[in-house]
Length: 285
Image (cartoon, rainbow, N blue to C red):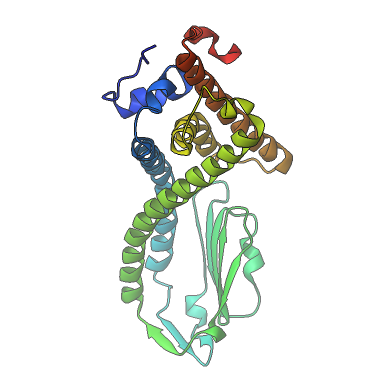
């Protein structure tokens, strides 16, 4: 039986066929593993681009807040002597930007306040003579003590240039890290699915199937398309309940196993000359 997906068909046709067409997997095992690996690389790159763009908007907003803070006339040159930042009362400030307690920046030359004043804000920076603290959304404040640093002097203008350079580097790092993380997870999860499939699917040992390990791995790389897309979408949904997260992860693995099993059964039927089910019935296959 001929598969309905030609080797010449593009990435998006393969993506759709990977979870709606059992016959696609008959074609997949006739191709080298390198083609499935290239598919996984392209899918990871596309999802990384989308996810990176989303995170870049957050980075852009964060640096916009930082620039507004540093541009304030009260912001000092950064001069650290003997583990303490040189501040005067003229530097004291409290800057709030955005509605709904979005961002707050505080410089306090006295000991009257501390970084707990950032609580309740999505983003915040607190600076006094002894430390600087950063707050981001629901995470704990990160505190950097000046006693951990050597004596140095950084002019405000130099600080502004450094922030501009850091913003550019952050965008590059975000896309690169996102891609490498997603790619590592893709292949690591593929190995887990391979192990689960080997232990739970007796059909793999059928003499008529006669598949190489590389062919089975190709099937798995394609079968993971839906779960990989769905899991990345869930990364942008805030779910704090660990039980729900665990159930979602289990569900993604079950979907991947189901698609892989269906594809392998289609391959087996093709090898023994039996008839494939209609596309509409493949989930019952």
